[in-house]
Each structure stands twice: as C-alpha cells, then as structure tokens.
Length: 235
Image 1 (tube, rainbow, N blue to C red):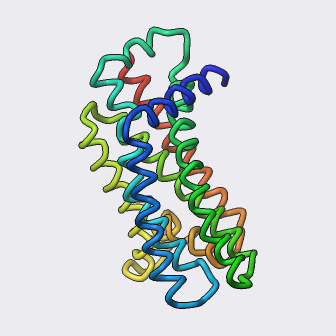
Image 2: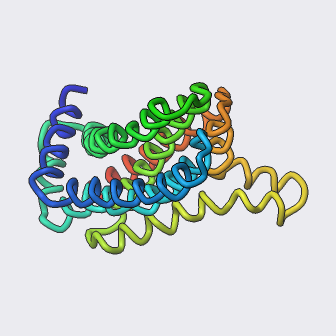
C-alpha cells in the first residue's frame, strides 16, 4: 500500500505541475457557479437535488479529461515498461494512479462544498439531503474516475482514451432509461446498472446499502479489469 501511495503522490504532483489540475478546477468553478446561480439562486429554493444531478453529469463529461493521461501517457513515453520492471505490483500501479486522481477530485469537492455553505448562510435547508448530495457527488465521481482509468489503459493515445471513457460513462448514464423502454426483468436489470438510480436516491436524502454497494462494485470491477488488462499487456 505504501508503494501505491508513493505513485499517488507522484500523480497528484504531476497534475499541478502541468495545467491539467488548474484547467479542471477552473472549468468546474465556472460551470458550477453558473449552475448554482441558474438553479438555486434564481429559484430561491433551498434544495440541492437538481444542482447535484447537473453537476454530476458535468463532472462525468470532465472526468475522462482528468483520467485520460493516467496510463496512456506512460505507454506513449515508454515509462510503463520502467514501472513493470520496478519492484512494485501491477495492482500497486493501478491503485496508485487511481488514488492520485481521487485526491485531485477531493480537492475539487472542497470547492463544491461552498454551495451548501451558501445555503446555510442565506436559508434553512434540510441538512439530510444536503449531506447525502455531497456523498453522492463523491461516490459518483469516484466511479467515473475508475471507468476513466480503465479507458486510459486501452490506448497510448490520450484522445482515444478520453473518447472511450466518455462513451462508456454516457452509456452507464442513459442505460437507466431502459426501464421505460424495455419491459420486464431485462429492463429492470439494465436500469439497475445506471449511474442515475443510486444518485437519484442520494439526492433525495436516502442512503441505501444497495446504492453504496453499487458504487463500490463498479469501482472494484473497473479497477480489477484494469489490473488484468495491464497484466496481459505486461506479458
């Protein structure tokens, strides 16, 4: 685990050495500020559900930009071979890369917290849904980054990785609509795979073990297949 943390620290540092972190945070602040003004400030309603759903969708589109370089850049520069021959496991590499992106995402989340604080200053919102909305924002972003990391393992071209990651995330977002299109058990099964369903529950103030398990399973699955993808590539 210490080796994974070393990789994570290296990744986090590389984000702030390059313009990536500043561009991501700047874009997030610009869009979230506009969303806050449009959805909350103008409506004068002290609830964050609509704001959360919109911001999660925005970050879903931004996360492939954040994660596209994690493994693609290592492949392009040839440094992935150095990592493979160093005394660390592929699992350490994947977890370290993932944690590096998560740390940057948590920095972004700190800026997201300013909006619930504004509600506390100027209104009396129900704090239960506010708390679960922040939790939903964190879990949804963590799942998006796991998918983006897997996409980054597929190609040394960062643009291709970003497109694959974005298409995959959009698929997990819109598959929830299958409940209304495909009848019966198949539609319900496809709907259970959607990112929207657990996020919708959390935005209402409902914390369900099944929703937490969904996010944990999604993260574990994509990290697992990323490890297997790199192990296959290694040999």
